[in-house]
Length: 272
Length: 73
Image (cartoon, rainbow over all chains, first blue to last red; front, side, top):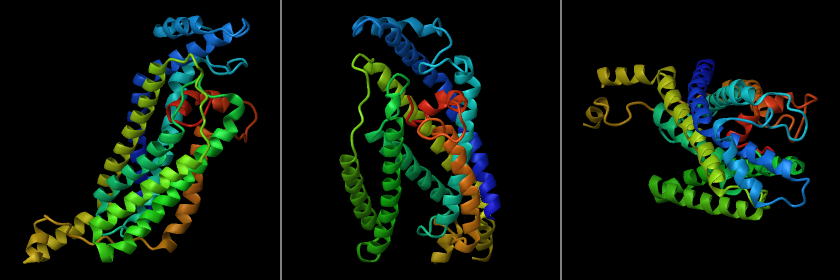
């Protein structure tokens, strides 16, 4: 049964990856290209002392139609992979590998939670788990360490930023586990619904404290376009929203027969 | 009476049976490791940490890394 669930998780992940890739390709790539144009413009202008506003405007508008500047984002070294590859095959492989792996982990989480989180049947449980994962892996990190386009983020601090990112993720997952435990403890005295409200409120407060205590990171260049930053971040959220929605709904539909819901439901209907 | 309500499908007609942890554990460990490693290569390799020398993995998945929200530069 676990193997079957796992296979279906991978399938749900693949389907979700296709949608995520579509969103990333259509809505994300234009923002990435604009950000790289900005980065190159400010790198080109850097030798001149303190280049400011002028190159920002030029950079932001120049590359509307995929352009110009020699092969792309190289972080100062030579570009090993062309921009076309990064935006096409590289993006596809990256998103698909990520989505499939996430689908597999999702199946494992589902296998653990099924029958342990109240009496939720497969489809609502999968949908709820996906919503929780979206909040834990996307919304909470975005509150403190939102996704950034190229040109935002200093190379030297990447190890530190990655650490912070995973520390926040770790605390979020632990706190969600504690909230679930708290709800279980309170359910008898407060009733399921009210226990849920208390647990979620406690979770929100605890996450608020953790995010407030973690150090802030702000590496957005002063002259970086606010509109571009906003659009990039909204697109990144959209990718994750699409990904988790599809994983939750597709996996739920695929998993219900595996855990025997249809058969048993039918049996009940017959034998009452 | 309640049985009738159940059998029409108005309420969940089945009690979900949990999968024993003993059966789940080996899968969680081995498959989980593979998946986490896959995510690591898309999200982190050659950024904060590096198992393979060079930056070709990083450059290849570069756009995905940014758009999936991993710390990058």
